[in-house]
Image (cartoon, rainbow, N blue to C red; front, side, top):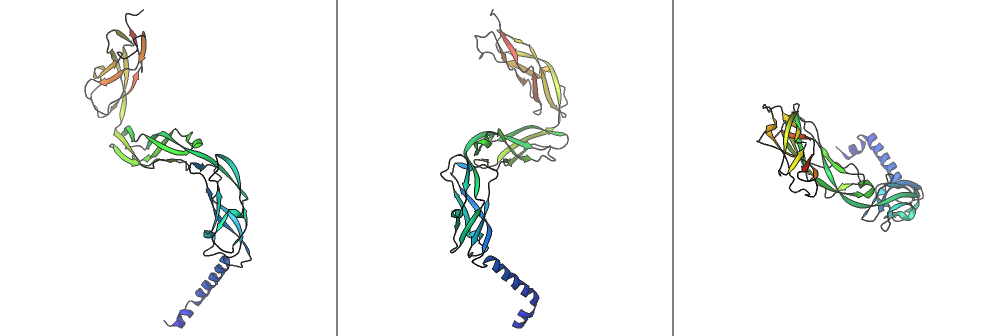
Length: 308
């Protein structure tokens, strides 16, 4: 291909490209005496222990300029800076003027800034320890979740006090259990939806989910309640148990499979009676999937004999 061919081939396209390049040059450089408007990033500098909490915070401002722009479209050489590094907590209206605009371009005149003022609400950051709440889906049909453990069980979160006061716990990302028939263990992230709140340090947590065959609720009654001291009487003397039993367990459960006791030796001897929770255990090893869901009543009364 000759040099002449380079200029003649696709000459229409090349002419159009040249024209567009010229128009672009005019847009960027233009007449130094022409006033132009552009959006400029806004940087608000605040104390290290503070955070901006208002939702209407602006990320940029409109600036009117006159003069040459160095390189590109010029935005990279302009920055609107608001210095609040010595400010205290609370709401304030901060005025904006050409003095807030920083530029590295020589000969550039800043005419005005819009808006002329911005609203800034500063709040002190605090830390708070909260429980971690594991989230998970549904396992395979015919199976259920027996137990869920998360490690660590608490997280240290940091953010504005007004936001942290509303947070009682933080959830994990949802652990999918689709098609699961066996227990699993997963590393997941915390799902903190408030962008002003973060965990410290930022790390994953381990969620362990115990899965097994679906269970049915059975009632076992009556189970005698035995004290560890013969000088007391327990009322009522028997309790009823609500037991979760997997479908794979074929034997029928009876009260003899369980032992209910109350510890009274460490109770206050000056009191005639006290309410205590009975402790129920298996008399013989059973299927580990069998769980005691409820004891009725949850508490019994221990009466000391020989007292008036």
